[in-house]
Length: 210
Ligand code: AMP
Image (cartoon, rainbow, N blue to C red; front, side, top):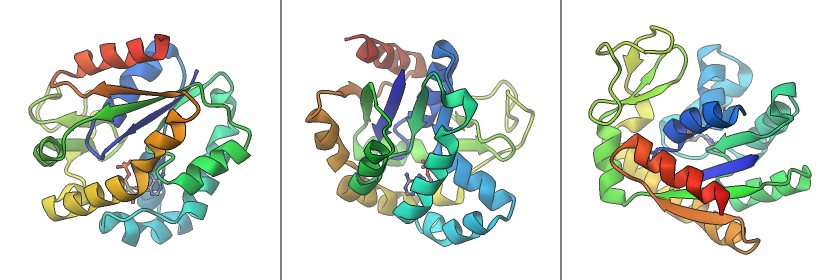
């Protein structure tokens, strides 16, 4: 199964990717996580991406396309993968096609903008492994500590309210047109993001079946 999760920032793509990749035994590939990791390690690519990311803008297509090309060649992607946060522009989707990657299904998780702003204010991520949490909807067992690796939970710099508005604008202008792009080939399914993570997972898995 080669799956793309679409949706606004904060719609729950990362959370669903983490759950579904375990159920389907395929890796979740998040360009955001790869870039944050590169930033943490101080690589050239990370430093190049930092200013874009901090301002809620998209990192240039050639940079993320390079990241994805390299990642999808790894052995663990042989039997499929879930793309979370890629593609985010039409040229990125075209590049994926040009690589000969045949996507099976694209699921767009729909959440209203007002709800996104509310959700982002409670979002926390693990500073060590990147796992995502929410102060109301997906609490860790111990406050402020990652269940998976024991790392400290922090607020992403680009989750600040003023940056979230910019990211939503970027989403509507540059990423939302991908829904039409994939609807044309009959691959698109939309699900309504639910309050409970498990309910959205159920709807997403059902969308892979039909
Ligand atoms: P995310 O964790 O998916 O919300 O991504 C965080 C940030 O990383 C985005 O706001 C962009 O600055 C950058 N980013 C992640 N994926 C992409 C992509 N496919 N294209 C361009 N920029 C990206």
